[in-house]
Length: 142
Image (tube, one colour):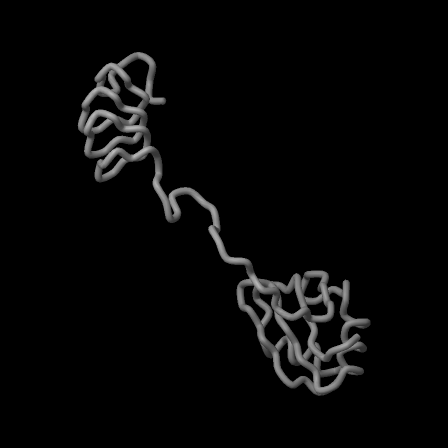
């Protein structure tokens, strides 16, 4: 092992920083614990590399508070690439907007709110009505 920091994962969500201190300090002096509550993991920094190695060997895959721990050498944070995070409606058009305030489809009828593919001039179209119907058709809402 090349450092004295460990990743401790698969923690019970009710695990506290004090629980981790009690668990880890039996292998050597603990410098710092970064506990991510309600995330199920923590980073534990030992005073020396030997204590970290002993803790890893003893605790990996061991049961603690009803869960089998996952203990490994902590890795440095990886640089994240920029760009879009993806997802619906993030940073761009939601459809083929032709100048309407809220266009969620392909509006060509001058509608204020188009949630489908309206081409008939309705104020609120929630389906794929191309004949100007207001949704009372027997095709249902598409």
